[in-house]
Image (cartoon, rainbow, N blue to C red):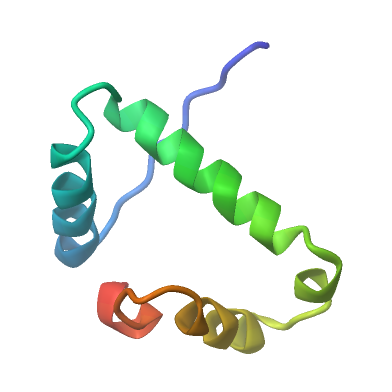
Length: 75
């Protein structure tokens, strides 16, 4: 594997949530955490029924998964 670097910005709410989640995982780096999250999202987005959704439908579906805050509250 030939890893590539990416850089992105996130909101204060997203950063706080990520830091809170990482407090329970002393065995993982931020890069590993973000890579795992991206991989999980891509697996979700590549599902046959998800692939056909527009952005608004995708956000609604993500909001229905799990018990977390709504996407609009995190972004």
